[in-house]
Amino acid sequence: MATTVGQQQLVAARAAFAEGDVQSLAVLPLPLQQSWQRSHAAGVRPGQEPYYRPLQGNGHRLESRDDRRLARCVQPELEQLWAAFGARGWTMFCANREGMVIVHRAHGLEDAALLRPIQVGRRLGEAEIGTTAPAVSLADDLPALVRGNEHYLQRFAPVFCLSEPLHDLQGQVCGAIDITGLGERDPALLQGYFRQAALAIENRLMHTLSDVHLLAVQHDPRWLASPLQGLLAVQEDGQLLAANRVARRLLGLPRRGPLPLLSLDSLFAGASAAQQRRLLQPGPAHRVRLGEGSAVHLQHLQAPRAVRARVPATVAAAPAQAAPLRDQQRDAARRAARAAEGNLSLAARQLGISRTTLYRLLRE
Image 1 (cartoon, rainbow, N blue to C red):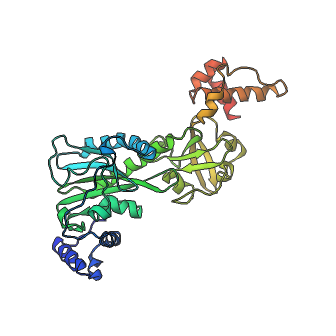
Image 2 (cartoon, rainbow, N blue to C red):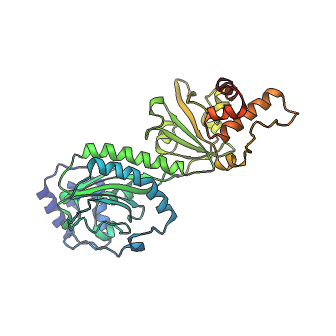
Image 3 (cartoon, rainbow, N blue to C red):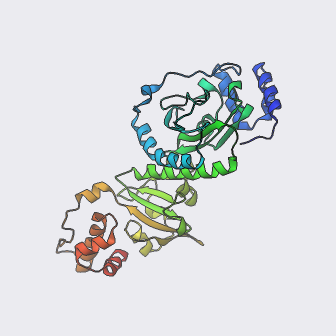
């Protein structure tokens, strides 16, 4: 979202806009135009000092359970980004959907006046400090770059900030991760890393679900177990509950918002009968046909924890006598694999059979 417009032109555009000249905004990218207008409508004036509300929760414990969960998922990725790009004069943070900082990373000796107010519990919305990258990401669900006089407030002319939106389990924007600092950085480089971090954070959010089957999908199996894997959360009855943004794109699902009522069988309607039977079975990644000339590799990552908790320790106990012996063996193999949380070597030992035999039973 960078602009090649000169800084002096932006200064002139800001002054003209403050006098009511809306046409002056044409020098800015459209998302920044809209953010300037929202800032103006909130009563913020370009020449004023930023207004910071008191910290919420005294900057310590986050009050919202959703904020605490998101913060836990963000923290590891923010530490990795800081190790790569952190320095004095720079800070990184995650803001929730209301623009409040819920995770923050900065240099221990940071003393820049423009960066000190960025703390956990501080709201940094357009109504407080005007146009910033996270404000644009939260409003428009876009990666955002705001630097120099692209900021609505003159006070932030020395500041560079870049952000990437985060999505919750319903595909809605739930926050943004951001790097802000004094100086200049390579936006293309940062955007690549921050996008990867955002995907990893969203995958962690999916893993917080405990009562679903979690499936990984990708056209290229090398991207499984990476931030580029698609993730599907499926209920025990086979209904699709949630999908991350990669899975939505791979499978042609709506990019944002709640998913349509959809069963796993209908989602993979192009799969063969054998492939359909394996969709919710533990084991290595396998190829599943989607349609003519299209397929994905799918791997079952976890079963509902509630289901696993109900499985007795003696998973090899004989099932009802009325069932055929082969069906009994298959059922026992599936229960053992679920009880072992996908550890097929452990499941095979519990059943007293070889790993090869267990694989064969799970594939039938």
